[in-house]
Length: 459
Image (cartoon, rainbow, N blue to C red; front, side, top):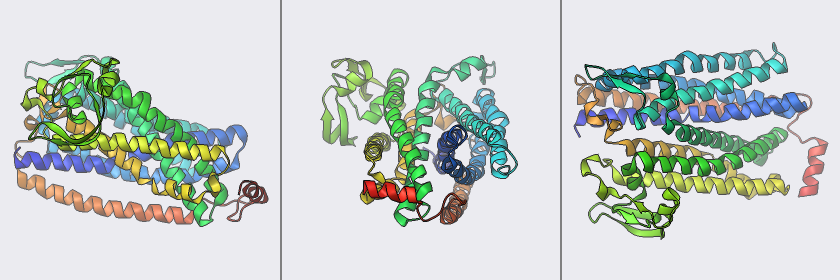
């Protein structure tokens, strides 16, 4: 790998990873905001209405920083990956343009209505704006993931006489079979992030004795949504996504499972360290024949290992890919257990007075971000050495006139700039949390009598 290629890859990996910290929260909160406003409209729940107003502010902050950090990504297609853009721009340009033209403007326009029209529009109009905000946010994710799905599993293209690719069928591009499970898994994970963040803030307020009525609304909403989404994240979306990897990218599946040799009745490694010298997994804890069953529904089915593929087609960082996948899968299981436990305590009426569980929920907030980052690392590291799977290698897609010094200079610039943006975001979020939700006459920092009575019954 040349140094220019290394710096180009590091720059895109860093900016994409940092950027995705923000849209995963907004996409998750979009669904929760729609639920809160639906509840406020249908049941006249003032606590839900106030919660929706507060979380719209959190959404807006994350949305703004997502826009700022996301713009450089599209420019890098031209500056750092010119050959890739020339080769595949006739395809990926379609979905990226639709994301900016339709989804982004829908999302930003109706977010503006919710932020500045709270006193101007009726509850029904605010609910409609929340619906459109949700649709715009999730449609934005759809178009971006349609782009990535095409790079993972190219469909609906034709090759021009000069070797460039163009869309053959827009409908086939948007119904790429790879896209269904990838989109379902990704958006479910976004709801997990939004749910954990909402539950964590509710736990923080409850532990500190502030905004307790609102805190309980956050906890109820976050825990119920989190329990459902963590379960769906594992099955069927995670399971379906993994099975399609073994169908269309079997070398990636073998790599992230640590399967070096083709086996009948392949086992599933829960832990272990891949050893590239011996082509084995050291210190394994394995479930016998589980991988064959999960992939092919047969205990003794053959699963292709890395030995079935030429080494030049292997992902170029096998250990990092293996660990990323296992971090994602392990954290997904832990997050599901945490939310399941919290849901049980909520159902039994003991959650709000169980301090150790509130602490657990509060401290769990960063882990969905780690899990989604590891998931995207699995997807992208596993696609290597291809930019467009089977059609264009990563080494062939860089800009020939951008040398290593230029790429390193801009990489360092992004590191400094994004560090500043990260600190600024944390400061603004901290100030929003410190100020808390706006309190109306029906809601005070001291608990109302009905909340005190509830706490007394369940202490």
